[in-house]
Amino acid sequence: MLTLPARLLSVPLAVVLAALLPAGAAPGSGTRTTAAARSLGSDLDALLADPALTGAQVSALVTDAASGEVLYERSPGALLLPASTQKTVTAAAALDLLGPDHRFTTEVLAAGPRPGGRIDGDLVLRGGGDPTLLPADLDALAARVAAVGVTEVGGALLADASRWDGVPLGPSWSWDDQAAYYSPQISALTLTTDTDYDPGTVRVALTPGEAPGRPAGVRVVPAEAPVRFTGQVTTGAAGSARTAVVDRRPGGNELLLSGSVPADGGPSEEWIAVDSPALVAAQVFAAALARHGVTVHGAPAPGRAPAGAQVLAGHDSAPLSALMAPFLKLSNNGIAETLVKEIGRVRAGSGSWAAGIDQVRGFLHRAGLEPTEARQVDGSGLSRHNLLTARRLTALFRFARTRPWFTVWYRALPVAGDARRAVGGTLTNRMRGTAAEGRVHAKTGSMTGVDALAGYAERADGRTLAFAVLVNNFAGSSPRSVIDAFAVRLAGEGRAAVRSVPPTAAGSRDWETACLMGARC
Image (cartoon, rainbow, N blue to C red; front, side, top):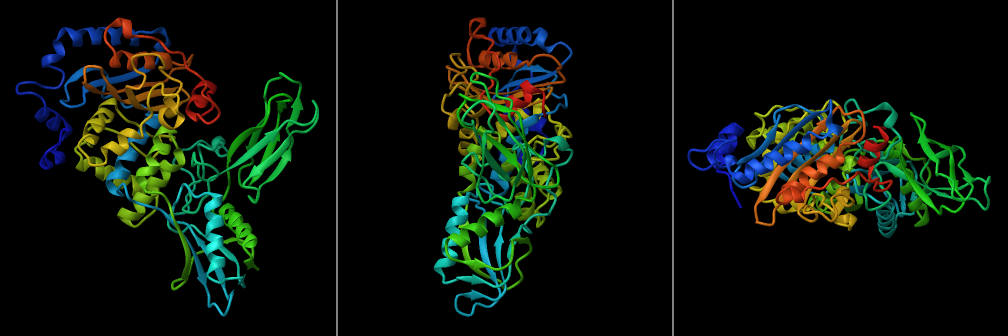
């Protein structure tokens, strides 16, 4: 594995790359003129001449991951929307600045004296930023509170999310995405409902009624979540289209139901981002306390643990290294923003987007990556204010190979064509049966008018390529098949290896594909 000398990391990236090339070589020269490189360039040029890209902006760069030799480039310095390929930057910064062993701790505190089994004051549920906190974890915390002898709380249950600031949504996030699970409110106290770990969400389960025309069954998970339903989902004829929609009215937790589910469709689920996730978590915790025999006289309310409050119980998340896979493989926006705010809190004392992004920028500067222009305003790439270049992304992929956390980072990238969702992630249904299957480890990125792929291609000859291809401003059909064919060509040899793979709607939890094909975000 290549290791950059420490003194090189403080100089511009162009100098770093020049130092890593063979003597007398410069980026874009030397062996780039070999027949193999010419063949690759010709094939990639032909792919990017596809009519699907007419009028679109395309930026691409392919380098040897070990030497930095440029094998192909097409406007590599163009500033384009990266969408979720930006998560590779956030993940690398988090592993470097927080460390792979970093954990998020949720605590329960007594804010008052404890005569006998009673707390004369409030009970506080204090969030530590855990994006993986499940209802079962809150139940375990409630059991521990009961186990230390608490049976009654004279005051209220306070939801303490003060570890970070109170700004819930990222810069320029779309107002009409507020109910979408991929656009959750970011809070230091939040709850998820399953091991996809989408923080700040609830699940709404829909079950067809007994007969067409009857209302569908509706159930929220967790059951104690303080939401209310307006409208209804009806049961359509067997074989009819599923048109059910679950939305949330902004400013509260009123969920709006409409549409229908087919009578023979079976149960289905929708994930919805909630308002005030800290209060939702506190409400679920209050129900858990009641199940364990702890009576709280006051209703859940926002608040802060006072100085001197006594810790009664705590729950630690898995280490950051274990969160990388759901973060990158499933393109989890909530985890991305959690990491930015936590970086700000740990490294600068302020759990805000501004503080966190400033620390990420410092990481990039120390890594020698900052000289390539870019603009980052959030962790996930959801904001349309973000701008990245293919040059910065491929430079990051080379730099990551020098870091002690590289194996964790690399294994967390989606793997092309792997049918196991926990391995393939957002590439599970892409490039199957091609030279790229199992050999392309890359981060996807998609929004309306944006599609991108960036990562590594492991070739059969043992050579590893670092690449990025960003496509912006297309208005017609998706160019995803072109991007996939680009990656397939990198993993294989010759034109015979090139195969266009049409985009596939991979299911309701692949939000990137849903956004791309539905032009909805």
